[in-house]
Length: 286
Image (spheres, rainbow, N blue to C red):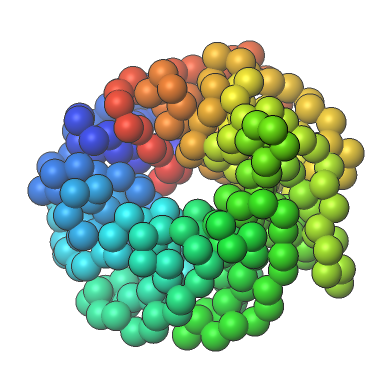
């Protein structure tokens, strides 16, 4: 299980846990970020130029480049690996592009400063956190036809599939900005708050067990029981992680104030290891 790491200063790296080494990759992008992986290729975008690059997983060489929306806040690849979905905080829209050619196929306006999007596991619905609009918007893929809208309190920052329903992370104001974690059960129309934390929300990821989630908070990276809101563990040395993902029994956390990429066993978080230290870092499993 390899790990693709982007850093605005140090470029693109591929980490091999088996050999425990970082392999620098040649990348023509001035400021790479938003790393993603498919079975055949690796992708990343550029913070300075409105471009995305694809690299062969076999040769690690650049194979294509295509336009990207400005101020990307999320990128998803379809399960069939034919399409790439781009969400722009600046343009308030989602684009569907053909992954092979980069051709723009569909576009849809959504939210106000939208923050995040995720594909449902079946890959037929795209979940979009609508930002300041306080909405969760669900779109059919790949043509981005409106499927449903749900309202959430405050600013909707992230949304994930949860047991056929939704897990939603919001920023709400109560004298100071706070993080609100909500769940929307299947066939319900109003989400229920299960936990509130101090400070702005960071990264958010539902764990593979579908019962718990990782939340990047001001006080550290926390694992939360989604039904009860109980904090199962907290890593206070990782405050406000903005990039969190899971695969199997492992998690990746990046984008915190230390600039580190951390590899974390979900059941033994005290064994977390720092893989990389940089500036504006992001990482994904490959």
